[in-house]
Length: 268
Length: 185
Image (cartoon, rainbow over all chains, first blue to last red; front, side, top):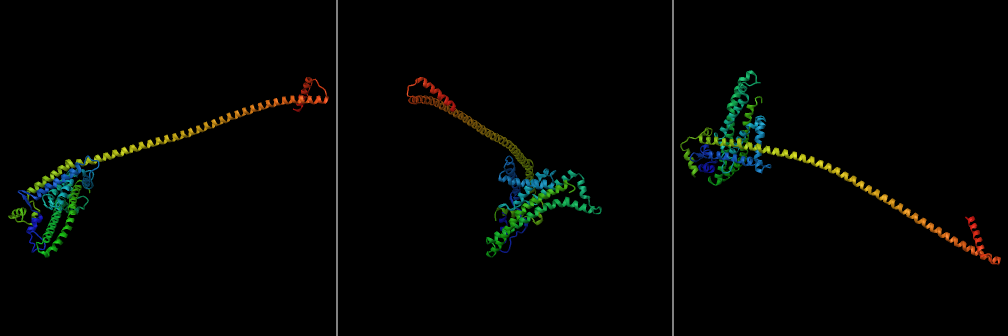
């Protein structure tokens, strides 16, 4: 769909790379009535996550020796549990947050991998309000709630009037910390994920579509080598984006855990 | 141009689009779908996958622990059995040694017995032979004595030239020889 869209609007004869008039065109795609591509992919992502965990964990729970697929999913899930939940938040509180951390990790991971999934090629994490902003808000709510639950009002007091800082600096550091903790954190969390996936998606679409358009001769024979160049770069970026998709899911989950950790462990 | 492109162009006709739109919540339905999808995922993980994972890991832990304990028990049992067998083996060896020893002693005594009996028999045979020899000698002696007496008488008759009282002379000679024999002995 992406290919058809961009190719249809590309002025292959005049341009050296196919660029749509507005970047939004790469992210809009109404389907039928009120249901657009993002909605379908969001539901698909949820189904894939549930399917992976169902066949990897739930169906495998009685088996002493897990299947190969089960082992792979188990490795992923226990990585989130042991390295992120327990590893970052600590053994005392970590397991309580595990279902939430696993949810965001799996959901973001699948949502990101849609960027490089053949025939889908659209990361739902590049829709700010479907994954990044919502999950960042959720993280914000959870870490603020955890902070108050574990430390009471001391939580905000220690941020606004930090202990161990010279008195003269306390107001300044306090304000910085307040802004950083309660405003910048959720925003940076959301924007980091969103921007990475948007950038990747734009790059992949432009490079691969340009490659396709020029190689297929729509810009004349002289532009075929240019198309080949775009295709090679595009494929390199494609491999790179696979790493980015996984890495961003990990970072998102890791930072969420770190934020909770700083809320439940005051002195660290 | 296909149906999707047409739809898209139609949707965008009345809109002024710019980059910032990407950051703003434009489509509420998308957000609702996202929230619902995430809630379902979270609910599934919270209620189903996470307990299943715990169950799986606990089962495995229990099973491995049980297996290790069973292996330990079996190992101890095997060690006890081995000790038992070793004891039995050394007992058997001792018994075998004893049996061989007994047999040797029995053989030895049997041999001594046989030898003793053989010696006894040999002694008997020898004694009998001696007796027979003695008797034979006695007989021969008697016969010879009688012969010698006869001859002496014959000789004396020839010397004297007359017939002597045969019976009286015989007794005389025999007496002489007896005396002679006695002195000889």
